[in-house]
Image (cartoon, rainbow, N blue to C red):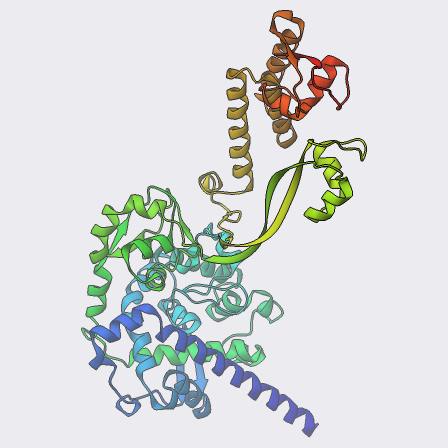
Length: 527
């Protein structure tokens, strides 16, 4: 029995240590956020203090909501260590400064929702009043709202925006969620707080008649620690006289102005063109989590400092057109050239292949030879390939991923379907140009290529039918036929090139001949 008690006590101690270390990390991150850095720069003397200057709450009775909780000296010392690590009070003063900024908003909205004023302390203990808070699991923002709770409150969360990282309407959503939990827990604020932070399942098995101290005894250690830490924090903040000490924070907030987004643009583009720090832009606009800003979203304005506003207006077009610099890298590629080899006396395909380091079958393929026989003076096309080192732009994936709840954004930014549509449109323009130039065979082939890419295309079939009709009309009209006399050195390929839209296969079909032709031979060419 003794070993069981020792085991339970050790488990409880480890859970308490985990809670303290977790809260330490939360408060440290909050004290280092952008707004705290600005406040320290404006009024550095305010943060020059020692822990000994503060009268801290001692062990005894603490009030939380309408309940009274008892905190031992050990617990009080533990929570004081969270706020004043190693006797340093800078972290505490940073959070107090944030409270001066946000508390009027929290308290006013709590009153509007008919909630106890102690609810407004939740952002302090959950996130340290840090808008950019990203907790364990899927909780985020000032109120550490879980993803599902935020979506239920119709907050937008996608690849561009996370509205949990705002303040005003995010507080509305969080308080509505807390009010719902309070209703489910029959008006018990302690149970509602635990349900808000850890989920309703944590308190669902606990008898609804269990209240106050008895409720904390049957809670998991981390949930009980949170409630005690909240009670301690409320008493600690009430002992701090901060009137007029942090008035400069409102001056800082007043130096930000909202901008109107008229074209899709990157956050990196705003920073690059305006010569400012992208990290600073993101810190002052935590709701905008993606790479792009798009028109039409005005629920949370994107803000710039006064000094940048004029430059933004003058350079708005440049920002919209800005593209990131793609670094060039060295890359090996094959460079292909064609040479003409005139067959000399006694030369064979084998000797020619050995001379140019190619295969006999390739020479026959390039020159459409049916046998190994060649004659003196015959011109053969030979492909020559060599490796070359070239400077190329490093490929980047600038394609924006699918955006949830952002209708129309995909049509404004490049993606695979948009690239394919642009390619088909360009091919249609080429097919129409071939038709104007009376290159009907090429127009027909282009339409066939279009239908392979886009079988449902409505324009390509009509152009293709028109090209087929024009080809048939040419073939049936004798006046369009020409007679060509084969000269020495001619091949079907060289003759076909003299007549736009004509191929070697067309010449063989019209003259019912093979690939081998002789000087003086008459060939019919239809156009």
